[in-house]
Amino acid sequence: MRRGVIVLATLSQLEQEQYGYSLIKDLNDKGFEVGQDTLYPLLRRLEEQDLLNSEWRVEDPRPRRYYKLNDTGYEVLEQLKTEWRAQVETIKEIIK
Amino acid sequence: MKLDTNARELLDRYLLAVKRELTGKDRDDIALEIESYMFDKLEETHSEESTVTKEELEAVLTEMGSPRKVAGQYSPNRYLIGPRLFPAYYLVLRIVAAVVFGALTLSMVISAIAGGVENVWLSGLEYLGAIWSGVLSAGAMITLVFAIIERSTEGKTIEELEEFYKFDVNNLPELPVEEKQPSKAGLIAETILGVIGIMFFSYIQSSNGDVPYFVNPSSGMQTIPFFTENFVNFIPFIIALAGLDIARNATILVRGYHSALTNWWEIITKGASIVLNVFLLQSLPLITLQGFVNLTGVEVFQDMEKWNNTGIAIVLGLAIFGTIIEIIRKIVREVRGPAV
Image (cartoon, rainbow over all chains, first blue to last red; front, side, top):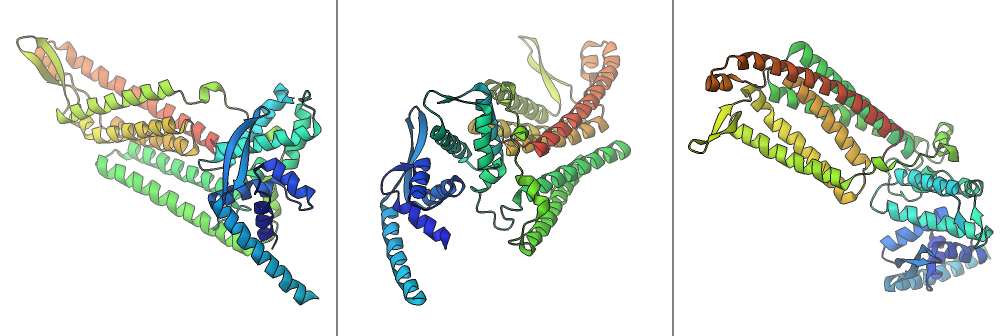
């Protein structure tokens, strides 16, 4: 279950461009614990699935790889959000 | 923030170890991203002007875990043998393949020396067939055993395998020295020499062992027998080995680095060259100076022919011995610390 949630959480934070470490911080600050060992390989898989675009940029003065949702990624994110909300409602009904 | 010299070297060694565990074209990119992450992580605790020491970096690396574990996160597609068992499986596979290859090559060399070679083509094909079926069946057996272990121990911790994930920064591989990096000029020179060699031996085969010589402008270019039929029979093998070397050099040139593929490729080519040299040794004389005797009438060429073939036998013997040592060294290096 967590696996699917990580994908949703990650995609949801990439509407704005972020590099790996800032994304980990972002998720952790919001209470969603995730480590680099999970996130970096996941980002690569999502990019391979053509949900993200990435590019290396040199800043400060070393390179960082920035990730951002592409059009397909936005579509998939919206689908996942809808599915997630529906499941939450279903589970609420089941466990009340 | 910057790393001091020792910390920089430690980081480079860690990244090298990670790359050695990765396959595919993305490994440099993955290593660069891990490096970027480490700097971000260090920036949390270090000011812009500070210098990170080796000890401080060690703490970050230890928290990240062993290079094998880090690399394993990027290799999710080994379904038959999962990431948990794959390091042990790959190590056993490499050791067994090297042992089978070495044992078969050695037995071939011994049987060729002891019993001689009656049919070069048949013996060569037998050798290749034995290597192919031996390595393949050993590999299949190991894969089967590990696949059974994978499924029968799913979700369980195997204590013996924990060794593969134990991490001590002192055990990271040393950085390769500059000389071990591929030299483009050297590879190009080797390739050109290989092509010239192929052209030369193709000509020798077409001339059935005769070599050209120039007498005077009126008679033009003449040919004279030099290589024996025994030698000419081996020319297709010599050309095939030269072709394999050229293809290997081209692969390194395109990739820009030595890889496990090109290193094993070299080991196999060298193994085949040992077999070729043993066959050549069994087929003396390889050159004849009878043409010079006929041409000049000087009998001394007759004695020279005997001594030249003895010299060739010594050179071939030394080449076989040297290549065996080199192959053992390369196999040990590849098994203990494979190229990235």
